[in-house]
Image 1 (cartoon, rainbow, N blue to C red):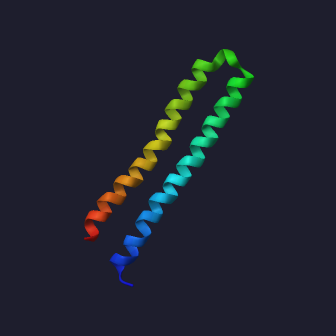
Image 2: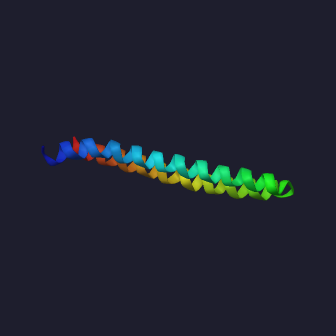
Length: 77
């Protein structure tokens, strides 16, 4: 197996792992926010704002992984 074949097989796997990590992180973040809202309903607005900002940052990491994948895919062929 040459280098380009190994890279072509491992790059999609890396994006999949990044998406899996992002899904786990989002699940934990939203779960924690829902528990906090359940304990303190009067702080819902503040909790939701912070959760949305955190979720955006988590998703940004997955998008960066996808962009790196497409850049690397262009260098393979």
